[in-house]
Length: 187
Image (cartoon, rainbow, N blue to C red; front, side, top):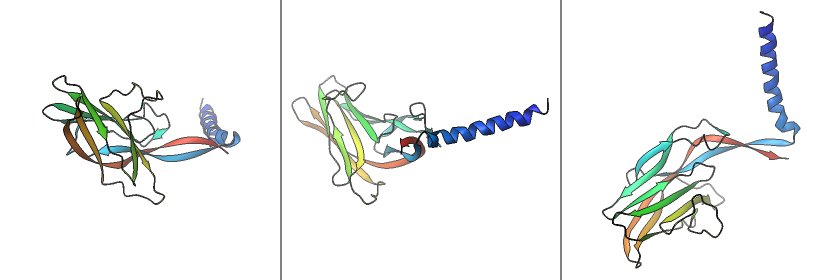
């Protein structure tokens, strides 16, 4: 019985070596990326839910709980922000009226730094699809040199059905790291 333990250990060790060699033998190279997400200022937007993206990203490591849903409450509406748990640095904003009025939301783009606002449903890329009271903000650096992502501001405007400005919110945010993920790329 004692002689089986070294054989079993040897088989496990050999299988790990094979696991590491398979990507190389198949002409694939592992690429390591930081997992980054948009983190809103918690003095501006209240965190109402935390979680992990590991259930949605199988190759995510060294990942811990992070804020995934925020709210900013006013007298006439609530502004929600949620992080889709995937590889992309984006945030979905939704405004909900407290008195059943139809209201809209618009956001500013951060130029020349990066990021853009998307309200389009031309290509069905969101699940669920965007409504008139929603927008998605994507962070994408457009400068070649490294950018200080610790103190950025996104402006969100809430409008009535008639186009009257109900509120304008300047929301500080930063890009934070929370673990890393691995992708395999062919050579």
